[in-house]
Amino acid sequence: MYISAYRCMWIIVLFDLPVDTDNARRQYTRFRKGLLEDGFSMMQYSVYYRHCASPENLQVHIERVHYTLPPDGEVRVMQFTDKQFSMMKVFQGKRRTRTETPPAQLEMF
Image (tube, rainbow, N blue to C red; front, side, top):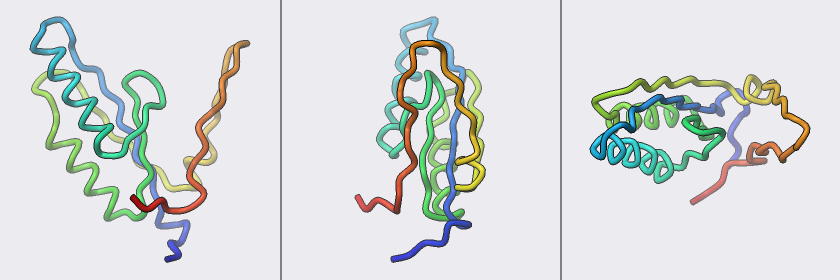
């Protein structure tokens, strides 16, 4: 099945959640594990990203993030088209690591 590039989207979730108590750490862990179970990958600490096949699919994942929000802290969700995501600039220090590569096509699970 071909999916046109203009409809493919990326979602990035950025969060700052407290971890000062045992309960807060559990909520942080639950939120982070929820992102991983929903197909997100870690870009940096507290920054996770996911490819979505369509704007409708992106909306489903935004709703899942909203549903799992902990009571404290802050969560931001950003969305990008494939083209916008591919124009992201990544700068690294002297010790270089490989940057993640976007999928070449829709991956079926």
